[in-house]
Image (cartoon, rainbow, N blue to C red):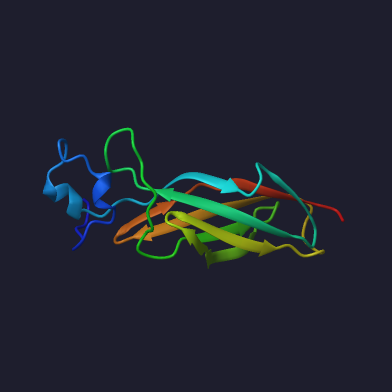
Length: 143
C-alpha cells in the first residue's frame, strides 16, 4: 500500500489533471531506475584509472507513456562488485549532477582484479525503495 506524503514528489506539470485527481498528487512516487548510463557506452578501464558511473532516476506514476526525472527523498547509492562477485564498495552515496541524475567516481587500484565489474543502485523515497539487479558497469584491464 502506498504511503502518503505532505507534498507531491513530482513537479505539478508531471500530472495530467484530466486523468488523475488531487489525491494522486500526494502519494509517494516509487523511485525507478529507468536507465543506468556511463560516460561512454561501456568503459574499459586500465587498473589504477578512475571510472565515472551515472544513474538516471525517473518516476513511473505520472501520465501514461511519460516519465519525469526526479530526486528521491534520500541520496541514491551504489554498490560495486568484483569480478568474483564479492563486494568491492558497500552502498555508497552518489553525487547530485542535476534533477534525477547522479554520478559516482570510482578509483580502481593497480591491484584490482582484471575482469567485469557489476553494480547495484538503490534509491529511497519515503517508504518506497527502488533497487536494481546487478548490472555490468565496467571492465578492468591490465596496465
